[in-house]
Image (cartoon, rainbow, N blue to C red; front, side, top):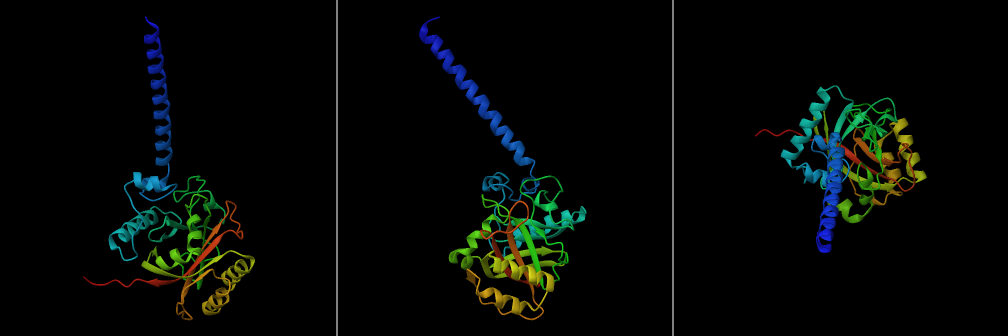
Length: 263
């Protein structure tokens, strides 16, 4: 065998080994993604590529009835399975498209997914001090402030005027139907804002006074007329232990039932 033939064989062998290693890595990544229950259900979990691979896309608008109907079905399926699911939260054109869980253990859904399997991303959850049907004057939802923008990591983008103005509403699917959330405040979780949130959660006082107190601390604000009996929701990002920091964000809105229209 000539010297050139030997070199050619060696090159071919290395190419084969490289292809084998790449195949193993791709297979491992695919298996890992399929272990995510969000991937299996067609929902975003880790990165946008997962959404692309699953053939699903973010909800394009709050009035996209077909996409919202898909979320209603997911919510109803998980509720029928006896899970701790309280709602399904979607903010159009963002990665926020998740179930909202409710459990008495404040830390449980920081490290479990909606199927109660250990998951480093956790799942958004309603504060244990809140009623599971969002009937309180003020409901507080927590999720991890992931650096890759998943969970509530993308809330930080609402501090920018462009994002806040272009995405004024979200959707909250609950047992009694579809609700629209009109966002009126985005703020950094400074000590002042943290204290306001804790006080409102504990006291459930007049939401108009609460909103007025937030206004000075807001990075973005939208004038929304509030009534005494309105229900508000706050989406607050936290660290992996559930604590707030001054680098985290809260997005606050008013919940309104979407009235069904006859065909």
